[in-house]
Length: 296
Ligand code: ATR
Picture: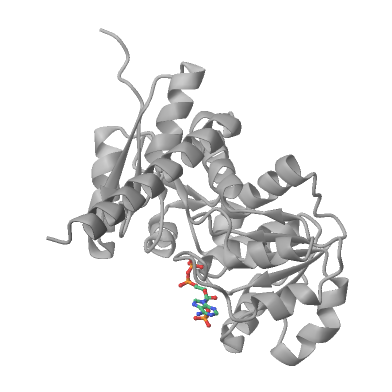
C-alpha cells in the first residue's frame, strides 16, 4: 500500500476569497511533492472541534486566515516565539500525540518579500506601520526582531499604544501630531490596515506620502487590487512601491518550513496567486458587463 498523501488546509471565516489552495496546489505540482490542500469555512465556535478532527484524521497542518488567528493561537499546545509574542497564528502543525504547534509567518513573509522583490534589509531602517490590528502585530514583531526601528500609527491611538506595550522591542506608538516630525526620516511605510481592499483610499495616504523622503519605499499588505490607492499616490510622486501579493506568497512559502522543514517555491506561489486574482477580476468584470447589457 502506498503512503497516504499529506493533506493540508486553510480555515477561515469567511474563506471564499482565499488564494491559498491555488498557491499550495501549484507548489505541489511544480515541486513534485505529494500533497493536497483544501479550504474550509469554520465559524469561531467550531474551531476547537475542527482542529481536533483534522489532527485525528492525520492532516499535516493548516493555515489559519481572517477571523480565527487569535483563537487558533490560543488553542495551540506549543507556540513559536513570534506566535507567542503576537498572540496570532497563521500556520499550525499537528503532532502525533494531539499536539498543535502554532507559528505566524505573516511578518517574516513581508520581510522576505521586501528582501527578494525590493532588495530591502531591515537592519537600522526606520519603519512606519499604519494600523494596529492582528496583521500589524505580526509585522511589527518581525521587523523589530530583525533590527528595524518600528513606529506604529493607528486611527485608534490606544490600540497602537497597547501594541507597543505588549510587544516591547523598542516599538513606539505615534500620535497624529508626531507624524510630521517622523515622516521625513521614514525609509519604509507599510499599510497594514484593511483600508484599500475595495479600491478605497486611506484618508491619510496622500498627505503622508508627500512628506516621505524621495527614497522611501511604500508598501501595502492589501493585494486586491494589486495597486492600491496608497501605492498609486506613492507612484505618482515617484516613490518606489511594493504590493501585498509578494507577502501573501512568502507567508505561504514559509508555512512549508513549518510543515516540511523546507520553504515552498515562493515564485511559483506568487505567479499562481497573481494569475488566479486576475482570473477572478476578469470574471467579476465580465459578469458586471453582462448585467449592464441584460439587467433582467
Ligand atoms: P487585521 O487582523 O487584518 O489587522 P483588524 O484587527 O480588524 O484586522 O485591524 C484592522 C486595522 O485597520 C486597524 O488598525 C483599524 O484601525 P482601528 O484600530 O482604528 O479600528 C484599521 N482600519 C480599518 N478601517 C480603517 C479606516 N477607515 N481608516 C483607518 N484605519 C482603519
